[in-house]
Image 1 (cartoon, rainbow, N blue to C red):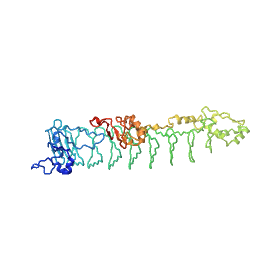
Image 2 (image 1 turned 90 degrees about the vertical axis):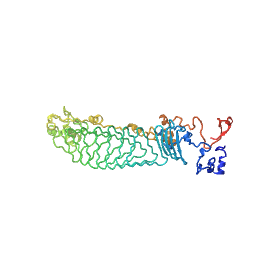
Image 3 (image 1 turned 180 degrees about the vertical axis):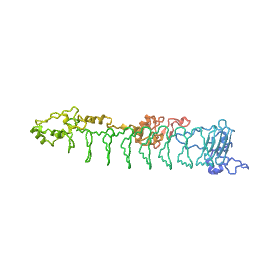
Image 4 (image 1 turned 60 degrees about the vertical axis):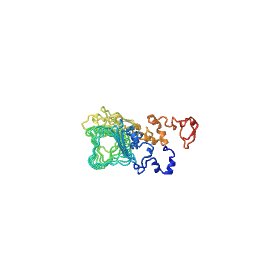
Length: 503
């Protein structure tokens, strides 16, 4: 008797493969007219299917898969004869009805590996090597009591001509590696019972072609790191039920054809330096003083033009006949000088205990006036007091209720770098990378050197990631193989110890 290995290739060359496969088959009425049987795997042996005897296990095609998604398919227990009834066609189609204890299953398998398998634990495996088409003429209901994974290696298109309703009992997480686009032809409403947070790592644009209403029943905070610009073609109205405060560390400007600042009970315009007025501006008030404050004769105020009313110097002119000639000549010579203006300016701003001091100028004595002789506003027994002083103005700007506010948004860019992860991954990633993204980035040597240590500290990378040689082998394969002497026997013969091998 011969075996399959004895001169098999020679006999195929001489007789042909088809004739060789029919050797040993009886040439009688029970023979196979097509010459397909027995198959080569069954030559010179029993014709009972190997799957029935447990010599092989027929499985469906479950290749492809996805990293991180386990199919949970356990190895099939080999069948025991005679519990498995197998039907196998010429091309390789298989139908199995297996009653092997612990391995009961029903299998319908196509020769390509596609098919349906019902396993011992009640699991059902459906495999389609190529396309899979499902058509349902009526309703379709799918109920899954456990977890589910749906993976499409290509594109997924879903079209719903009616309503599309999704109810999620837990969290709803959506990760999009590319862009997300939504086209809504009618209304869009979002209701959030708890908190809502939105993070945009680059630019954001909102376009509203009609009315935009923003209603906030709590506090509304807007923090801007750089500039903020608001342009409105129509009107702007800002109303505060309590206070409205505007502060600029460098400058604050208001410009309009008509500008109004009205304080129903109190108004103040303060500054250490500046200008107030115009060609047709009228001033109405209680006290006017210079930069030195309410100091009689030394306030520092300067007047240009004419006064309508009674000033101190005008009162002094009533006593000109009492002054000597030198005094008259003094006033005549200095009537246009600042001294006269200063004296007139302080007539209405003296202290409550005002007593005009004696001013000696070039040895000239100026007569003192009694309190009743001074120019006082109607109804005032003493000069009105101005509470605004230079020191008071400085204090208001620095420490008062209306002091300039210092604004710091995300000092040191802590929030920015934490959100963009620029410091965490050295600008290689702006998010927490996956294993596949790390492998892709490591193809670039600069990226590998930049984030290698960071990933090691996160325990996502082995500390010996730079070592190219496997630790158990201790060497790497060269581009061109070279012969080496073996240190372990090849085969089971001791004499093979010195034979060469090519890695």
